Structures are given as structure tokens and as C-alpha cells.
Length: 111
Image 1 (tube, helix red, strand yellow):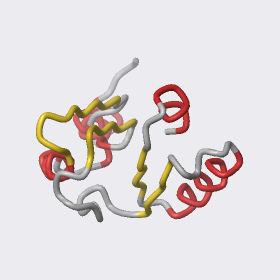
Image 2: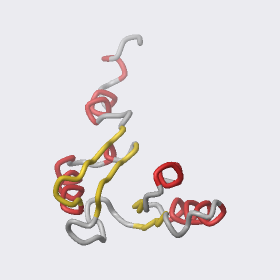
Image 3: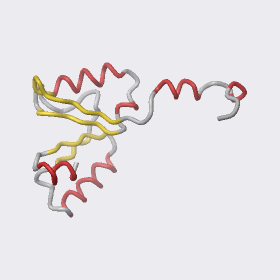
């Protein structure tokens, strides 16, 4: 978030359900002098505490993979974005792999 703000001048709002991450991010936002442009909110991405059509754009990094139902998260993202806005996501992990990991060990063989 600080890199985006530094390079673009945009105001960025971050949401995380982890209170430790909220405190850590707020501390670093203050240390870098970006606390006026970078806001951190503790909340659930399935029930974001924002009005409809609140944001000009959105991004997520390694977050959506934690949702049990992707359509619920994407519906909530769509709700808070202004019409015509963009959403960008980077995910390294997918649920299909989690399902495969739950197989008995003898099924795996060697990697």
C-alpha cells in the first residue's frame, strides 16, 4: 500500500481481519509519513465496512485464496467498487491444491 501511494499519490485503504497486521501497518504508515494517505481497517472481506460504490479501484495480494466461496468475495469487491473501476489480484495458491493435499499419503507418490 505504501509503495502504491508513494508512486501514484493515491489514497489507499487496506482491510485485514488480523488486528496485529492493522497495528503493524499503522505504525509503519506513521514512520514513513504516509498515515494521511494510507488507512488500515480491521474487518472481514466478506462483509466490508464500506458503502456501495466507494472505491475507484481495488487490489488484493494473496488474500482471496483464503475464501471458501470465491463468488462471495468477488460480489463484495464488486459492491464497493464504483462502476467501471478495475480490480487486480495476485494469488499464488488455489483451493484445488488444498483438496489434493487432503488425499491419503500413499496416493501421492513422489514429487
